[in-house]
Image 1 (cartoon, rainbow, N blue to C red):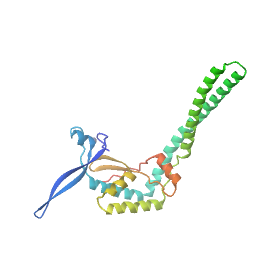
Image 2: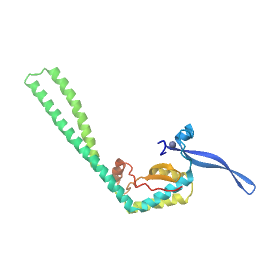
Image 3: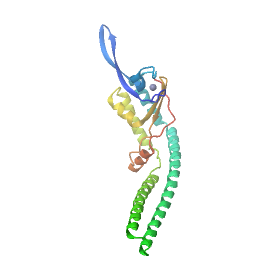
Image 4: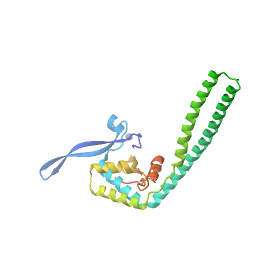
Length: 236
Ligand SMILES: [Zn+2]
């Protein structure tokens, strides 16, 4: 993401000539270019073009370092737990409100039924009101289920050391293989966003790897969403 205009960077390529002895080679050079600049020109945004292969390299290297830093990961988990706790607080309050509304609505239904039994309310009128209240109750109960599910699933969980080691091995393999399409997959999977201030100030945010050994935990981490580490600045 471009720090100047907030737009994403897009992959672009340019043809170049390279000379070796007396031969001329045509080659394609890949860049990442800010969308505004690419589309509307440098007057709109003059963020520098970034060499794609070098940036991919630097980001993967930073990721590798980050996954070795168990202290950073523990800190990120701690922060995520804090945010999850705040969300849980709000959700618990909403759950209480929904429960109160359900009780109130159920009591209203009982009152209409009683009024109908004692002959105080005509059947048609009673039926209408009970249908309206019934629809409201169904909605409230759905919301209650969603809240309860969400409350149960909001505990961020640290990835195991084994998983981190496994991921580091995968990142290293990808790095050693040089520029190739597999890099994009790894980057998309593990990098949340890359904040580009300038060519020498690029801040990648990494995702916490999901713990694949435990399906339930993986769901939990997905629901919390990506967790930013302390940004690791890498020079390109
Ligand atoms: Zn821009």
